Image (cartoon, one colour):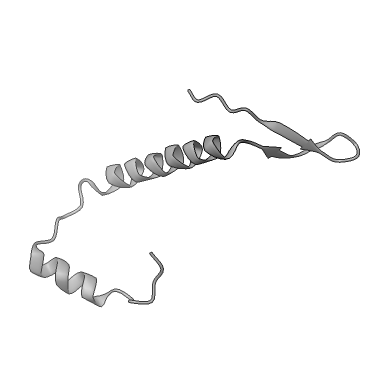
Amino acid sequence: MTEINKKYITDENLNKIAVQIPIEEFEKLEDIIENYGLSKLIEETENDEALDKDEAIKFYGKLDKNVED
């Protein structure tokens, strides 16, 4: 497991209100979370019916072109 070097930010009553971590560790955590999400998506869709090329072109052609990536 990745060790997280964290610093707690506290308010005037010493209640923890935030955490500060090095950017490199944050980026590693982002990668871990993204990979986990992608693996879950793959698991959820592995039994879905696959489209052939023509069906895929037709399907993706109907998608909204203004949707963000």
